[in-house]
Length: 456
Image (tube, rainbow, N blue to C red):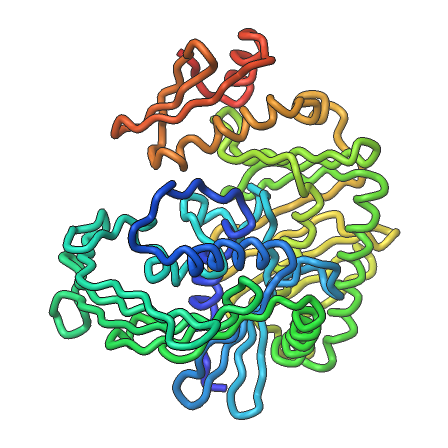
């Protein structure tokens, strides 16, 4: 196809950044907007909500030589343990890569790099839809150094909203060494309160996806496109002689997911990049996921989706690299171990037990840090006693404590007691508060200590 794997990975990385917090909490919006069109802004918000709930298909404008790219997010039950696909098509040749995104999994290698980025499916259009939400005002320098010179909203036809957007950067240099300047015209098409397409013309073609981008939200179409992507993935990533092993691995991971929901699960992540553990208790249908090195403050915590590391592991090992040749995937029956060698240096092992359940996954990709998981099909009683019995307020407080560094964009916020609860203050003086009503002061102090944070 003439598309390098590095280019594909770059596109995948950009997609993850744009999607990973799509599935997280939606930050509060300013109460009053003077530039944003109310109907367009409402459609933007509703489109992101709908995309996170039922999925979407985003088709980007065709690029050089007709290269076509699609992003398909399918959060329902799929025929592989993954939910995100990126497809590339050119000259009737198709390829795809698979990833997995979850709402709140701090152990996920696909979402950990974008915690502090407030985003959604349509986030790349936010500055055009709601400039003030990103700190842009007419004639003023934004926090990112951009000066918005002109912003005009019109309605050229029924169901269409046009935006003219003109400005320049005080800090960013274009490829010719001049200050970046932009003149863009966009037409947003709305159907049933959702944004279904964006047509962009702009002088900033090196920076933006100029042309027509379309969005589909109908579940049958999403599932159809995802199934096609899986077929593209199999055809483009594996030698035909390896497809039997691929199907057996798919079955092993899906069998493991089913077993985890029935019997429980303990996941231990021992790699240096994302150390931690995940627990699922089937009788209570509750989860606990904790990310952080032993003896250090907890870096991420969640109480939902403890079985998703199985899908993460599948996507890391099989979803990205290519495995050409008849020896790229080997199975050793004596140890029930699959060994995978990718074309771009990925080396992985997957072990299964006599029941066909995955018990460990280890993978090194592009020479980076390894991803190492072990899976036991019961919730560890000792860990569950410590982390699994949080009440609703304790859960919210724990997530607030751990998330304060991202909210305040400071590595070490200062936590202090207040008359109604606790307060976190960042390095620039910004603060956020949490009301601890219903919790005893001793319980609040104990939670801070358990998480590895100091409450003054």
